[in-house]
Image (cartoon, rainbow, N blue to C red; front, side, top):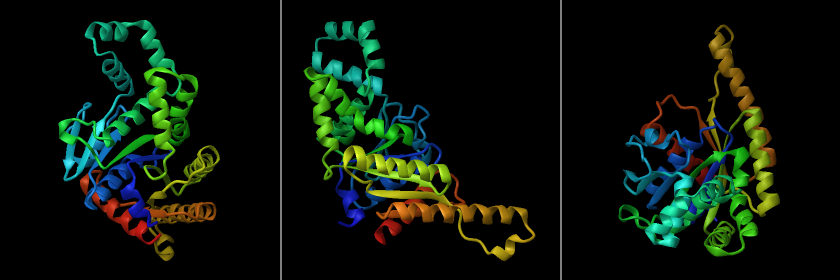
Length: 297
């Protein structure tokens, strides 16, 4: 299937990669791309720094769903609050809810239980695409999660099954089983890997691709090579140190792209470094580049 059509058909896309490679701007750009192609998109952000609103020129989410542009929404989510919401939903009686939420046992459990917070994030995404959202966005077509850096990416994806294996009964165990099945459905869920064409980001990306295959039996939907130095006339670099530095960085990019292409033969989008300030203009330019590149993959 054409990769763009496949991305359009997914209900959850996790965007992951090494820290500093531009995951947030790629997340925003994928959201803009799919929204322009007619999908109703919700961007999920878990980073406490809240970067997405700056890229889309909106006010900070503060936990609310913000309409950034036609068919494109964003929300900053706090995993701990999602777990508390689950308690409220299941217990319903305010007296019991307040006692549980105030309990040190509940606090220690929610802070320390492996995989619980990650499962809560995926659970919220699943509830949204199943039509349980607030009135501003009852049911998005797709949720795109700006996930933590690569080192945590695989553990995030494995979290629901870990919880399901440990907690075999009750609402949490049932939730984890449902979410694990959701993440295992290739028609509903996919991963996009973001990298730069530098040695360590490419190495981590290849390790992530191998881990996805080894642990989950799947591949990313696409790899986005971000912030590439455009080619430059080598003759111009002879007497200009700044131009020579640019040429050398470009040479590294070329070497690492060749290394990436040798190991990864799936869809690859190459996005150049752009002289555009972070904001909607940059997001739009990257979205157009990703669309053109993936269309030709």
